[in-house]
Image 1 (cartoon, one colour):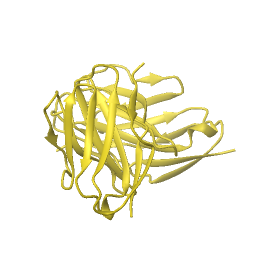
Image 2 (cartoon, rainbow over the protein chains, first blue to last red):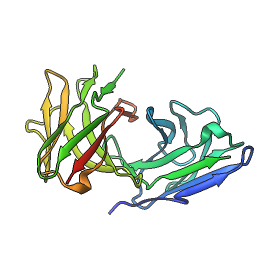
Image 3 (cartoon, chains in turn cyan, orange):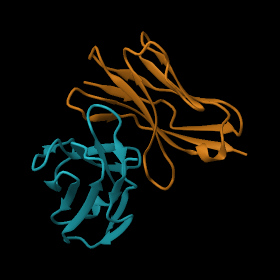
Length: 111
Length: 113
């Protein structure tokens, strides 16, 4: 049974703080993804990774970076959090061009 | 470029009745797949059903079925015998050749007792 976990369900940070969102999957999936979800805008892809130490920009990478040092872990980094990064962040993983398994999401509020 | 359109921002259905959630897609790829995911208020995305473009039969998974009409480029989700726990946001999704998911805007389904 695939499991994707995210480090926090709810997070509150202050403007300018460095924020780490961690995602771990336990099924040896090659591909991992970070999305943000906002009302009226749906889910938008921030970054994705097809392999360890490999990353690709998604549709809205500005203000974010990622790290994939190990296959099972994909971290999203907000170098200097801003209020417009208040959102729901969803991590997902997949083996190939098929079903993506999502984590429970992290609701980030930046004050 | 691929595009998914869900024209129903919100839907209501009476418990135990069937409901159809609309999805149309636009793609030039000869081979593609379509997914439906459910997102309850808790936030997680739950996979419901998948239809491949070359599948001969419409996909079914329990109370979920996909009314796939390739010529019309539609992939509507049918939920039979609605339950209160079906109240959620529903997303129709495809992917591009690079493996990136393309999301529709979602339909919020409310099941009335």
